[in-house]
Length: 208
Image: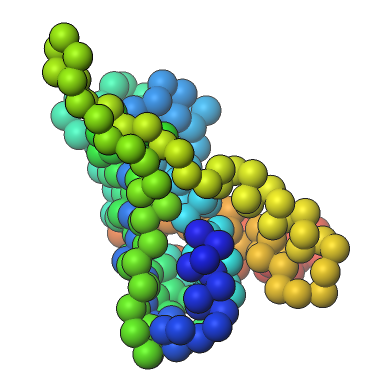
């Protein structure tokens, strides 16, 4: 993640024009519940939106989403398949696959991958590719053992560092990242794109 961010900052692929993003998770009890899991796969919108805003350094201004559940979905659960299109203020766009389709043997239970298209080249990030794959044993089982970066620690460190410098604060757009998740749910409900800023207003009547 960090090396990808540095490559973008150096201008290795020019200006980012489009991103194909994948945040595929597995089944996980409360995460599929509408009450506790923010609407199933919709809860992952905030994570991907946060990462994309950090990479592109431009806020999301509009989203369009399609969502659905498979035939095995339990009553009261949120959608386990969400496909999202996001437009950024600088003109970049992103398509995001948020589905509960990660294999059970995944080392972290999910996939996080970005395919970035720039004016000077392309770049692909597979955040959980740092793993060993093994198979064998009595039942010939296959397993993944993740040995790579601790992304949770990385983001916490970056958030703390951003409060101590005058550089770009990717957490300054937190309200819009959360609004992107809410806008995605509304878009899926009405079947139309939703502009950010149209759902919430602060105590002064201003949109974030």
